[in-house]
Image (tube, one colour):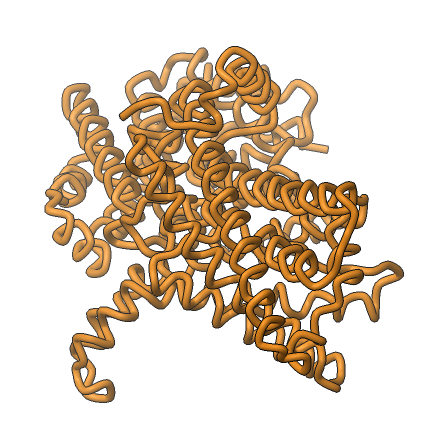
Length: 559
């Protein structure tokens, strides 16, 4: 219980002024552990603090407001603590702004960072400043907020990381709190201002240890870091007009042709006598080399595109780059364009993989290369693409991996920019100041890492069946289409079986796309501060648009 005879002048306001509404000074994992610990053993404020009174008295706000009625030395103490709190928070903001690394970022972007220095000069006269000077400080803080926001908006130029994103957000919270304290300084005798601060603190204290809120507030930082870059920056993965639409088709034909060759290579690997780990490694290398070659020659792998468009998706739904979603209609328009681009890409992969694999096996049969053609097991290949619940599950797993590969690419590319790897290589004696290596790291390494990771994820998934109570595998539209082509030429199947197999291959492509795109879109929305309340509205708008304009989802109407 708070002591009833506690004197107003004995109350400490400093921690209340400075700590409220500020994010903690630690990383994600340690912050999470601290909250778990505080759930078990809550932190109790010191008895002479405002926080203690607010926590332990039922009539805390009336009591605190009554202490302000006493025209005694407590008013001078409160004013002094208020000034000290403002200086403490301002010093943190100024320290951020004049940090050498942050200053270098502002200079690189051509931004004037003088508002930080102006705030530093104004702090010296804080105690005696009048109403106009206090308002001038608020204007300086607003200029600083604009500078920090511009820094956040130019992440694609300077790169970003969890620490920088968290620090900029934290400093925006500092500036907001300082403005509240300056407003209080101008209205120190206003009980309404004091009451609002007390009520806000009570609301804040109820959620300070919330695990769900903490995870939610930090997850968007992780999502933002991941989606800020995609591999092959600047390349378009969404057809914007009819010319690009057909260009996508021809590039997907190239991708399907290359994949049909590597699908045959995988069948050849199946004929080897290897351990499970041996098969996993060989499958993974085969997939990885295939994806790297497709990328190198400019081909398109259907269903992989959505995962590679994370930053473009984010930009499309946030054209002003203020970390807010512009409109639900912008998302609907984006989904239409991505769906259309994916449809023509899937068709290109499907038709070429099916046709070329059939031609390859037909030629091998004419040449009577039985030792080669015997590796094709038609019944097994057709069985793997006949529509079943398991097939949908396996296709969803592949879709998840496709999404992850694009996000990994974006994460790596972001790290390359944020850490200035290219610049450091150009100035490193160890790497002979190689410009070519620096260019490769800046432009290619993200895509390379993403493709390698995708290859190993796809090639090794079947190993999980040894430790899980159910079978787990993957199905990808292009590889499955190639397998159907090999099986149909090798053996005679009924029309019904062939139609089922073809429908199964297309179903795989649909599931690949839906899963891959959904994950990428979710992260893009999350990085822009969206919540689940928006999803029904978004889905309803997309459904309505599809009902009235179905053809627009399959063919580009504009030249």
